[in-house]
Picture 1 (tube, rainbow, N blue to C red):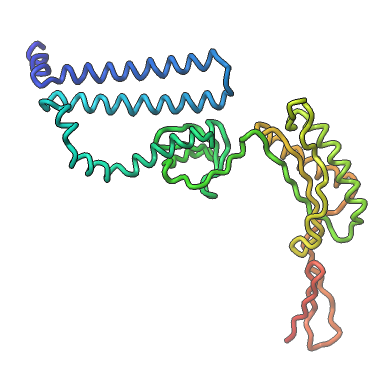
Picture 2: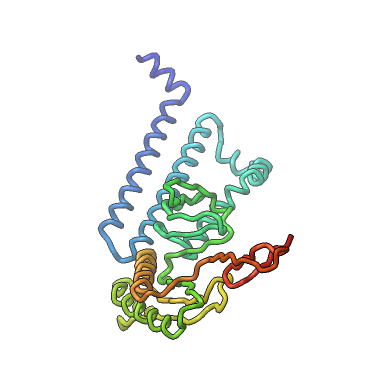
Amino acid sequence: MMDWLDLLHQYKLTSIILAAVIAWICVYIINKLVHDFFKRTHFIEERKEQTIESMIRSLTKYTATLSFIFFAISQYVNNFGRVLAGAGVVGVIVGFGAQSLIRDILSGIFLIYEKQLHKGDFITINNTFNGTVEEIGLRFIKLREWSGKLLTISNGEIKQIHNYNINQMRVIERVVISYRENPDKVMEVLELACEKINEINKPCMKLDATECIVEPFKVYGMTSLNASFRGIEYTITGLVDDAFYWDAAKQTRRIIAQTLYNHEIRLAEDTMLLKQAEDLHTSPTLENSGLITTLKD
């Protein structure tokens, strides 16, 4: 046992192991203190607290790791400080090799500083990736996709962010009604639907400083007279708090569908009618959504 300890001391492994233990303990203590601090205080929004905590956790981990690596090297290199300060050529080489690392770190800092996202936000990155922000680090962002998969993307690869959780969201629901329905009656029915939507979604509505609803649900109007050659499109909009967007949108769709059903308002649908042609040289005509096409031999 003593021989083994002497061997560790001879090769300075004892100091290195001790430094590793100290670094791990420091990281654990800092993260624990930060977590307990935010748990007991509520002077900023919870999502912002989680974002800051995630960034501090990532920062302490990288700092401890780099400090440990430099300490371990210094045990075997004399005047390591001078060598590190004078290694200009090596620094340039490492700098070129670490360009992506530096870009990721700077991008992560700017994402947090400019408040583009917080932990818990539902976002779309580069019009491709959708998910809930689960962790924000100096180099990577982790997204939990709807399917449950965890997506990790480097901060430097992020070019565009669509954030669904910045103070407010506008619910926009479009419904295409059959041409055979009376537009005046449709508008009246949709207005009834909006009244019920405002009643059900009242806890989700966006309020101003005086606790008044900023933009209640209403019929925006006809947004297309010939939506995909199927019918007339009507649009309903309303402004809600971002935290309740998904619930409000689901309730809105359910109420619209039920109200239209109760008043026997038919939605547009693709129809295909076959008509017997009088001319023997002409096959049956095909009518699709009001458009008639004759197929000839």
